[in-house]
Every structure is written in structure tokens, then in C-alpha cells.
Length: 114
Image (cartoon, rainbow, N blue to C red; front, side):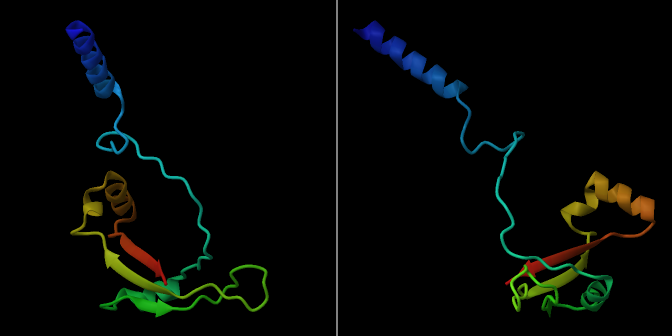
């Protein structure tokens, strides 16, 4: 009986050790699936210029229609523009390459919907 319990315990421990953890992401891959279900607005150079010098995010309303339904407008959003320097993006190899290619500091444009 003791041997059977030990074998069962060992098989259980080995199975737990070899089974992948459900929340493991360190060095692994996390896969998300979904869809954007809310309408989005395009941000033009004029709106980015307006928000660039602001201390807090600047609020805008979309002028584009969200879909084919007459009279329905896409929702409003807040726009903020900041520099990538002093953020984790500053050391990202792609951002560094892009900055060197353009000979300019890239800007981080964040669009937050209500």
C-alpha cells in the first residue's frame, strides 16, 4: 500500500511539474483575441499640433460617421502627445532606429476614448 501511495504521489508531482502554468508569461507568449467593437476616429496633424503643447489631454469629438446609420457619430476622445524620452520606449530598438532614421525624437500620441 505504501509503495502505491508513493508512486501515485511521484506521478502527480511529475505531472504538475511538466504541466504549463496557466498564467505563465515570463519569457513565454500571451495570446489575446478579440475585436475593436467601438468606432474609432482618425487623428490628423492639426489635432496632434493642438495637443502637443498642452499640459493635460485635449478633448476632441469625431467628425466622421461611426457607421452607415444616419446621424450617428463616433464618440469623443482625449488626445495627449508626449516625448518617448524618459520612458521605457526610449530604449526600444525599433524606436531608437526610427529616431536615428528621422534624426528626430519620436512623439508618443495617445488617444483615449470615453
